Image (cartoon, rainbow, N blue to C red; front, top):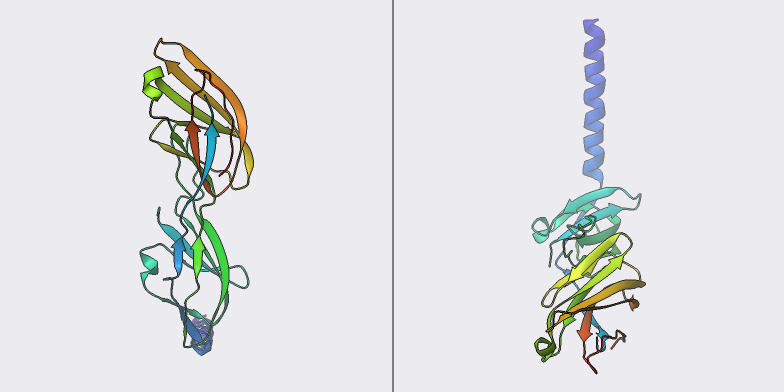
Length: 226
């Protein structure tokens, strides 16, 4: 029995040595992440008339296996990988998180590209990571407080709702162009509450400027993109 155990140990040691030698024989190169940056948020205006979280970087090989996962702090220095073709995928740390209805959400970024690593050289893939979801902020006219004491704009997308107040920004996790349902509510100086509901076309990857304009003291909501 002892002889059999010794034999198995010898076989295991030989296999381990062979595996280590095979790894050592594979040519290696380096990957630099200095070219991975967030794209500037694009603004789109939605007019209602009268009425860098950190990035995570994944390196994925040709077989679809994750080789490296690095945070913004980890990616300050080049990392070593076996020469070959890879996919670089960069995304927000909270990309998979779904914020609750009372939370404003955040801008979420996602992008990927393929690149080659040559033995003994440093690959520096360039990738601008755009915002993938959509954001909204509210702009009020200068004379708003002469007629109204409060207002809010509620957005709905699927089972998610966001309530936007002046001075704030909210985000919806819609990654494709879609219609967004809204309800605009305003309280005038007489304490009367007026509201208007509808939908408007929103664009994924854009920051939407929702503008309130008054005409004939009526609340009407339209939209356009500039």
